[in-house]
Length: 283
Image 1 (tube, helix red, strand yellow):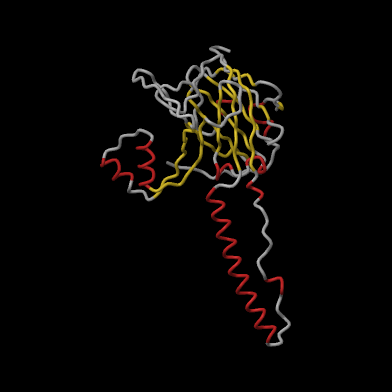
Image 2 (image 1 turned 90 degrees about the vertical axis):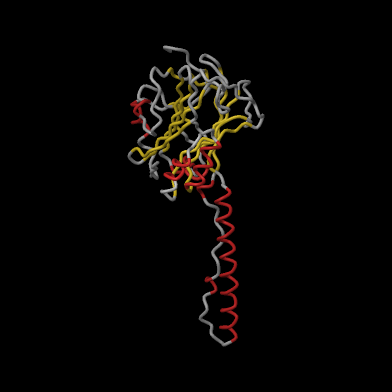
């Protein structure tokens, strides 16, 4: 498994994507029919014929497709402020069938660095059956970059089982495009065999919510550790200053104390909702 850290800077490339003008979304989104399923590889080659939409608040640019089995999403980030902490927090995609904006059902797409044992545990939790030989082979590498799709199912809705039905798992990838980055997502329409399925059919209306950025537990822990370190340094510097002043040394720089805390601009949280009408075959 491999991964790339994408670099993003300017907004000027967006009009080049798909060769189509960018539209600010107003009203329901009409999903495009996917005659062939897009390759979930973080590239825009399968989206050249789809109109890009833009959320006016977050600045996120996106497109929507579906076929009879899956919903496909593409996000294009060229503005660092819009991308925010998507690398750290991942993308939350929520969905409802009643038009409400509920976060009870969805998928959390996130890239993680896992140890071999953590990866084995994650795969087995997702239903994979691994032999001891496969586990031993996996443990030859100390760590893996994994593109994870964690199911959000606060309602504990059941997932019917049908061995004859072929349901693809949720998936995502991202990749750099010149000075921007492209994200692609796949979510099954059916809930049969997978609890992350939307439970919708082509032609049906659904409501989608997207959320990324904000402070993760890891970011909060790192911030607290930095503050603790700054506090220790401040106490040490205060002691040095007091000692120097007692000795008559007036050259101590009072600006040597810990710098004032500044919120991480990358920690801004972004979210928006859209109503989507799923396409039917050939449309």
